[in-house]
Length: 463
Ligand SMILES: Cc1cc2nc3c(=O)[nH]c(=O)nc-3n(C[C@H](O)[C@H](O)[C@H](O)COP(=O)(O)OP(=O)(O)OC[C@H]3O[C@@H](n4cnc5c(N)ncnc54)[C@H](O)[C@@H]3O)c2cc1C
Ligand code: SF4
Image (cartoon, rainbow, N blue to C red):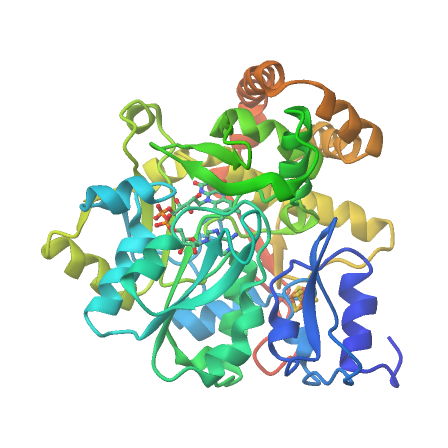
């Protein structure tokens, strides 16, 4: 990067053009309206909104998660210390839980815990608004971030939206908001928000409670277009309603069309589109459990709970404040929570932890070896076994083939009722085959800190 480059030039050259943008929206949210997040085949990307010159803070790159997330520094800033486990981040307590209100539980992505917490914080007057994502707005197939100020608005924003939504584009609105906020974001968005809190951004400082879903894979919107095409529907404009986790947990993709038809796909069948449309940010993210929140929530994937349906979440209280909120709602009968051992919680997600904590670092290492820009997370695993690298050749090879035009074209021709179950069987077989390699040594995950401290001095350290 040359000296005469503006901060926006640096962002474009160092992050957007190399394909490292995570679509968080921070740069747009800090641009005073000069940048908009424009939907592309590769997710929403920042672009000038008009003729107005784009002025961004000089240190924009330090807030851009596509460039850098200083996990060591942010852990110290948020929790006061580094985490005991770099697999899961800082943990205060872990629960298995769900909302005690059947409607909120059923409408939620897993147990409705995030929505329940937000609604109660609002009703108790602890917040005046919540930064959330509204599916179906402005158009039925789109999704946008909003500041919800009523319980009904928060509830209308429950469920997971499996596409990148630039939540931090709301930073200007957050700064102008009168009152205190809760905030829900994906791991990259939360990390950027935490950095902005650290450097004193007025909108970020209004956030008193940070919640976030576990985040395994996210897809470009092309996945929905492909699903429609394979059902003979040519245009997304025919969609009148779209829900990614409709009905009883684990829920199904449900798309209602203008002609009255509703197309449905079970969650695990719809997953067949992941190899074809997975976002690049997914492949380089190293944070599965949303490590910088007050409360993180994921699906309680375990045969015991999946068999029961209804909706079960795994809930991590990461801060004392997060723990107090959960306990208070439990005591008032709003949340059902049972303590969960860390080993049990993380055995539910062993594959995804491996995918992020070893797979992403292998993928990043290969990309760096090709001389291409990579994100900096301030640490890396001490050891990546050769067997795990060989497994990664298969996984990354599948993604490389899947994102070709030919593969994407072919997948549109095969109906989901064939591909869905086939993919699910292959996925389970591959999971079983690769399980010994993926789990081996994961429990003894050790890292090397390469972190940049809060004053941006390079520190070499080990742990
Ligand atoms: C892209 C994505 C990938 C995920 N991958 C996994 C996984 O691999 N394993 C796993 O266990 N769990 C995963 N989850 C989390 C899971 O789907 C549930 O969100 C989580 O269990 C919380 O459930 P809940 O019922 O408490 O949330 P709800 O009460 O339904 O609330 C969900 C909240 O998340 C917000 N939200 C939804 N989508 C987005 C989005 N795209 N960007 C920002 N905020 C959003 C909503 O605004 C809402 O406030 C993922 C979620 C997402 C969005
Ligand atoms: S990752 Fe976020 S801050 Fe960085 S370029 Fe993308 S939208 Fe902007």
